[in-house]
Length: 238
Ligand code: SAH
Image (cartoon, rainbow, N blue to C red; front, side, top):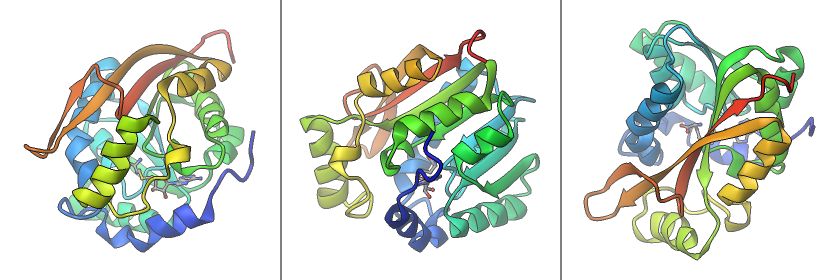
């Protein structure tokens, strides 16, 4: 596994926007817009109440906080310190209990807490790291045998380039320019291979479709742009 699986420029990008994490109309607006959809999808597959949950690349805690509010005991990790401070402050202000944030790499935590979590989520993060396979492996290691590991990212094809980069960054200004780099996007088949290699069995996939007219997202079977995968750690891979 890659011990320093981090791109400093990516962290700087997220840190500089950290004060905006909880502004639903700001740069992270799309994450707020998809949050209820992904939360319900995850909770429908792996009910979160009373589960030990790890959110890898948690940012300002948009999903982590919502999972804690579903009754999970959540640890959120990221390598951007400012984002973690914002996440902590939000939990304090909102009175969210059973949530902790830590500045630690997934790979390092995997060495410290292997086979520990019932559910691991790693959303919209793999496309920002130099070695996504290493991050997938770390998530797999962190999950208990039989535990659930969820990923979301952006597909790599001409349509996703048009929608997620040109459209979202240059036409609709949904997210800042330079948020996503085409070469780092991941096809579902590539992510599925990383999962298989890490001992994670594919269970379900789901698309997140944006409607530019209504400005809304919905879950769909179309994984051509934004998508999520639900995987489960093999019980014999420990
Ligand atoms: N998962 C959150 C935030 C997604 S934004 C959500 O979906 O709401 C991507 C996040 O990945 C940022 O918070 C960024 O700081 C984090 N990140 C980027 N590289 C990372 C790395 N190497 N290790 C941990 N987090 C990283």
